Length: 412
Image (cartoon, rainbow, N blue to C red; front, side, top):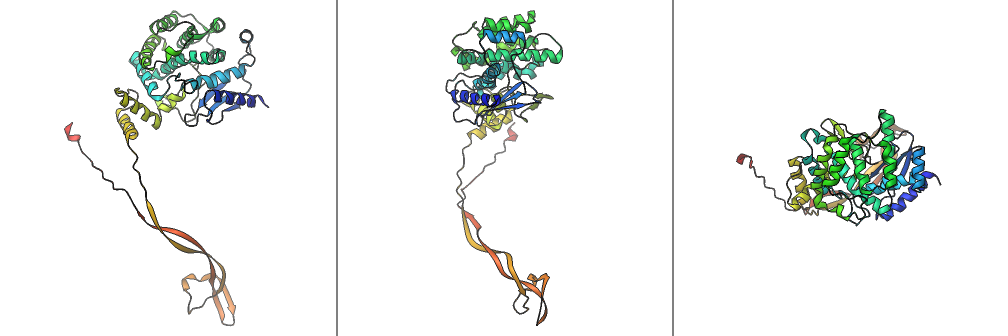
């Protein structure tokens, strides 16, 4: 069995433990030309988990990584990253495990509310990066839960280390970008142990603006150090206000947006959308779903039932249309078709001499002819091959349907 097949087998075992027993089987694939060492995607329709790896990827290579792995008793670094980052983290955006209710944003409605809170906390000139901050907030809520679920989250630590090294090689810079450093440090405050914190220190710049943002987030959101019970983090009613405070504290670091990835999630090809002249990537499965017809209906209906105002995240006319689509009842239609039996000639089995007394001249086969005692004669189709079929000739039982159009434009 190859390493890829072993990883796929382990991933499917974990998938079942998450509660996704009936989901599409998980897949692990390897590519020579992959953009990243690891990327992952979850299909919200069939819950199929896909993890793509760059050929030869090994998260434990240099001396520091090997020491960290030895002290954390990591036997297989690649498996650790694939299971924890490629699946556990992504599933936790919905809930980990299924039925626990512990997931963030949990659904499209709550993602939309979090995004609204983020936008309230950001200055106008930084609104276009709201989705990045919303996802960073959502990751910060779920990462302690993933640690709680597995008992260890060293796979995520190895992933962040790899992102730091990748960007350092790409840009020639040293250390995390400020916003990313603050994000990692807030996570380390919540759930990182001593070894995790020491290991990631090589990427820290200790920028005072970073330290200030971290202090503000930890204080204003009442984030405990080394949290042991994550239940208080999943009070959904508090998320919009928490997201607003998070965004306000992090906004000072947004002059340089990170090239480092928050997680391994990559949208399916074609899921990127243009926003403000820039390509906007979805960074988790729920954010991706929120941009679909089904997702927009969930958001509009959720706000309607909760008595919330309109979402600032998509146009009001689109929200109204989505709400009506969700509220509209199906019209049962039972249509009966009246049919009759018919037959059709397909092709003649053979030909005979044309008989002018009884045959139709239109059907003469001019490319064939007969020469007999009566002289020259064109061929005529004989013994045609027929097929029988049923033909619909009328429909009945249509429902009564009435439509009223009210023009109220004149009242505005």
